[in-house]
Amino acid sequence: MKNLLGFVSFALVVGGISGLLSDHLWGLHVFGFVKYLVPDGHRTAGYLVLIVLGVALAVGTDRIGRRPQG
Image 1 (cartoon, one colour):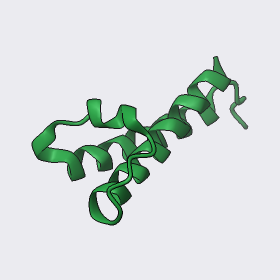
Image 2 (cartoon, rainbow, N blue to C red):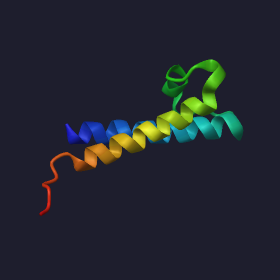
Image 3 (cartoon, rainbow, N blue to C red):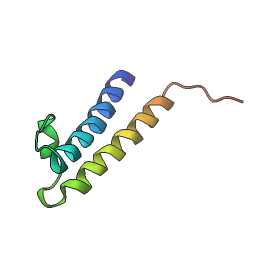
Image 4 (tube, rainbow, N blue to C red):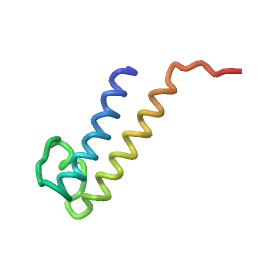
């Protein structure tokens, strides 16, 4: 489960970054699935939300299975 969540968080972060780069620099869509996850009029904000969700999921995944210290 931890590996699956890690992969999803990686895909969200990299997909969001590639979406931002494709909108503002090249126009090349490396991760085609992200265009279906964000609304058409709010692409920049949508890609930023994907990055934030991916980072939050990565932090949450890192805490899974970790024993509390103390």
